[in-house]
Amino acid sequence: MALLDDDRLFPAEGRTRDLARALYQGVKDLPILSPHGHTDPRWFAEDEAFPDPAQLIVTPDHYVFRMLCSQGVPLADLGVPRVDGGWTETDGRKIWQLFAQHYHLLRGTPSRLWLDYSFQNVFGIDRRLTADTAEWYYDHIAECLSRPEYRPRALFERFGIEAIATTEAATDDLRWHKMIRASGWQGRVLTAYRPDGVVDPEMGGFADNVALMGQQTGFDTTTWAGYLDAHRARRAFFIEHGATSSDHGHPTARTEDMPQPEAAVLFAKALRGECSAEEADAFRGQMLTEMARMSLEDGLVLQIHSGSRRNHSGPVMAMFGRDKGFDIPGRTDYVTALRPLLNAVGMRADLTVILFTLDETAYARELAPLAGVYPCLRLGPPWWFHDSAEGMMRFREMTTETAGFYNTVGFNDDTRAFCSIPARHDVARRVDCSWLATLVATGRLAEDEAPELAQELTYGLAKRAYKL
Image (tube, rainbow, N blue to C red; front, side, top):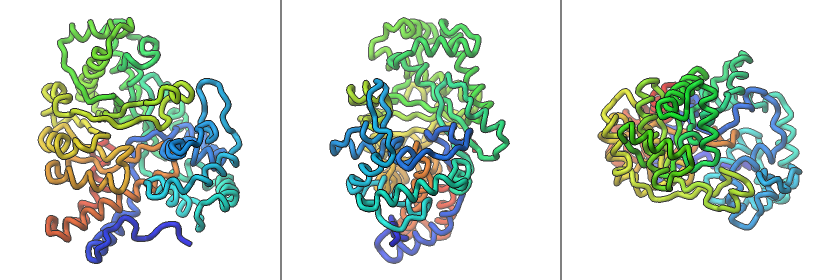
């Protein structure tokens, strides 16, 4: 029994479905570009077998365990590590059985599509996961993981990944990227510069992180000028290890362009831990503009992931730490927030700023009009809660008329779950082909233009936007 319908996500109407199917056949086997994500570079550096099915598929994937958590399944029972030193389940079989007993909770969700794709196409499974099949599933996947062809590098090549970018903190030593290079393996694993820990005064350890950056670079990071120079040096270090982008996860899209003396005063206050919430937000906003100016110097693409109210649950944050499924979307003002940055550098065609959002209400009202006129702006694909068939289609419907296709950057998967990468890209390719087929069927796009656009949305836009 196949777990997946061959025509999944295609339009129901016959002619449009046929158009979508034909377009999909032309792009389904194109290489995968994954220019932003959170896979662990250590996997590719050491190329060791994944420990067990639970640690590969359940424990690292907050898309999966947040749903189970919402139905009362404790995170510790799913093997999610605790930062407070408390107990967490380590028996992979027990975790997998619990996961299987609750697999029905994922019906209709993107995670169900991704997981069934992985089970069928990565592990060759032809039966549904249930409490009754859980043990068979575990044994089958565990046996697969023991084979050389299921090691990280082999899967990387099997998935058809041309390039993948991980995301590291500004102070990371990039040891795993160095090891990958030294190994002689030809897989292209890039890093991305993520300076949140040294630009957010409200993040724990901010002053210590800034001091460490000073030690790493030899610049005096107690001064504003030295702090900026240290950023330039760290960015250069990341570029040496393949980085083509920086990534900024800010609560808001706020930008500032203060006079330099005023920014220096605010920086000194941030180092002393004396910033109010308003001042901390202003400092983060100033640093987005500073990062944009540095991108004009060194060529890094600037990604802004804003609108996430991160770590919403205080108790979960205290017990399990960051990135445990409790980041929640919030309303975001882009028109006002981005204006200082855009007034400073927005007309520069040699700068690329990619905007991601969790606020769908801003697509047609704000984001598409902004990207449809400012040369530096591009729209990132639907992210996290909108990384779904419906979310992708809404994105195309609300942005294409104003921003067109060429002010978007294709798709990236933004995932920690390695085996979901080809599944996510497959969903994006099917949805984009369905949207193009709809445009053709309704007379808004010439049929001979659709295959070229399908290639662009699948491959070309991401390759150019991220300089890959």
